[in-house]
Length: 277
Ligand SMILES: CC(C)(COP(=O)(O)OP(=O)(O)OC[C@H]1O[C@@H](n2cnc3c(N)ncnc32)[C@H](O)[C@@H]1OP(=O)(O)O)[C@@H](O)C(=O)NCCC(=O)NCCS
View 1 (cartoon, protein in one colour):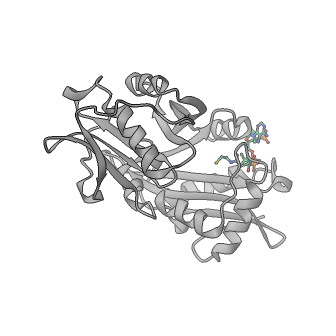
View 2 (cartoon, rainbow, N blue to C red):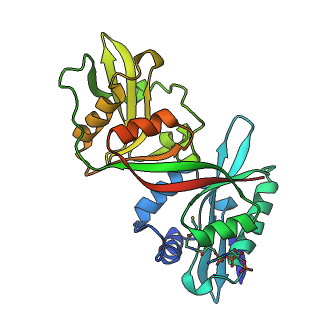
View 3 (tube, rainbow, N blue to C red):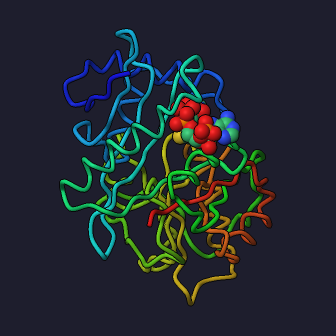
């Protein structure tokens, strides 16, 4: 087995290894090269900090790393790891983790973070063994029916230019995929909807054309009046997506969870944010 950084590796090779490593994943991960590249770009991928494992000339393992910054400083973010099925349980993940750790340390980065699906027992066991510890639960919801809303609620929900994104403080620090740096890197760019009354912004939703709601916020004085629900309904109208998805809601965000439940959302997946140290 040989380990190498991914900085000079042809992207189609990385895409092929990724597709194979995730062929038996808990969720369908069918992404073409362009979609994988967009996902990696959005999450701050750094090929020179990422490590591949080769066996008999074939790329059989990937540790895809990025860098995320919080208020303390830079953090190594593990976007995804994968080992092709015939190369598992041979220590590849452990070896790639050690090489990535060295690359991060050489840039003064000691802390690391990742998310793992709560039901992914193999990955959970592997990350625990590597010294990652669960920090908080992140819940993912889906709304699969059209939301009924008051026809004349007293405010207007309409599309606004992304430059008007209010960036209000949120309930808790967003998970890395929902961080503002990641959202800004989204390609195509996310879309903004605002709820306004007499020119005052009461709330906003930031979403993708596929119906992924990346940020939803209502100003404190205007809460519990249906603003968030009407923003979600407006996202439905705007995108005609079959389902709305709200991902990585901090399990401590009781108001967010109550809103989603009141909109008939189903919890379809939970993840653990794991941190090291
Ligand atoms: C998770 C995954 C990357 C592990 O890769 P790997 O190279 O097989 O892992 P390693 O051989 O380095 O395992 C290190 C340790 O992790 C734990 N582990 C790994 N796979 C495990 C499994 N299937 N069941 C229980 N423990 C497991 C063990 O403690 C193992 O040490 P051991 O073999 O001495 O008992 C691999 O199973 C995979 O690619 N899965 C599909 C993609 C995925 O789920 N990625 C993670 C989410 S992004």
